[in-house]
Image (cartoon, rainbow, N blue to C red; front, side, top):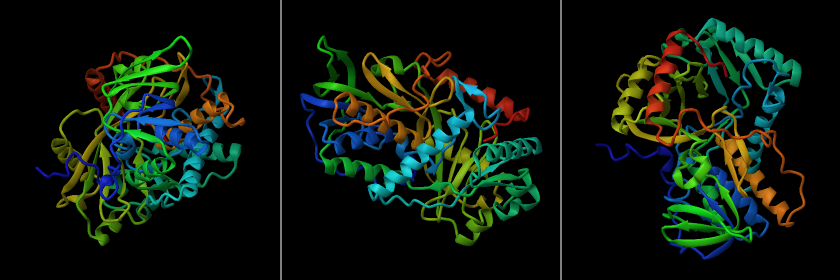
Length: 439
């Protein structure tokens, strides 16, 4: 079997970062649990202000979904793509949540520039492909209302008869037009993760890999002890950033964050003329099915990155064949192209699909399905700790998600297998009935 199956293409020449083996200290000011983008962001913000930070990760930093996603920098907040812009979600206007999504995008772009992280960042835009005429019309109306409310948003609608300008193959005939998000970015998430790990290591964050957390206890004096298989560590603050990998050791988070399983394929290199025939502008794309297609050229412009068929626990070999077969319906040009990489990861899905940030029993946590929002919320947690310890006096700690309580995920007890099958049946049924998910 191809040794690259099970390994993200993004890890090439990037991950894991070569770090010295570090023993778990007995004491720290802040212990960050989880080495994904939220944890790396929190650690960076804290350490830049001189705080003693220890980051523990059961594998190595960057191992999880932060280096396994497709690399599209999205600013969408769930539930804001349709409906009255003045309508409320948990008491917050949809239009305000949209702007909060923009702030998360701006935050990560500013961080990449500020920290000089080389991660293949390019502003190529993104397509949202309409799976029916009615969905196209809904997206067009929503865009018109959004521009009326908030001004130009860097997007326009492309009718079906002009879709060939953006996408080729059979796809230009199957879809009913698209929304073109001109200002969106894509990047190499593996290089971004590696850059963040290198930066926090340079700044002096204690990074402890291959550490399995067992539990966290709150002490009478208000501090905490994290009990691990490598020893115990006492901290003034605990930051949970385990996201879609929240197990029983994370306590209340396990039943509140559902591990949304996705598989991704990277094809073997494709001749450039063939790639441009399929994707003339090289924009990433997602469609409006429930079991949606999401794809983009690799940062090196020689492969296609393909995500599809969520909620399947098959091995990567079987899944790679299934995904490529499904994409050949869009692009017959993929007929002789083979999958070279296939991997899977867990995104953090909450019961209301919204990002969440907060405290539980004195410990900070966040949950977000987009990596831009994960960065943003990680930085907010850090600033709250800096304020609490009077290291930094800033009012830049609030988010619109502060008063949104995170609830148990329905019917989820910690084993996702049954729900995977249920979601697959539900979403396939909705796609069969052409019940779309406008974006």
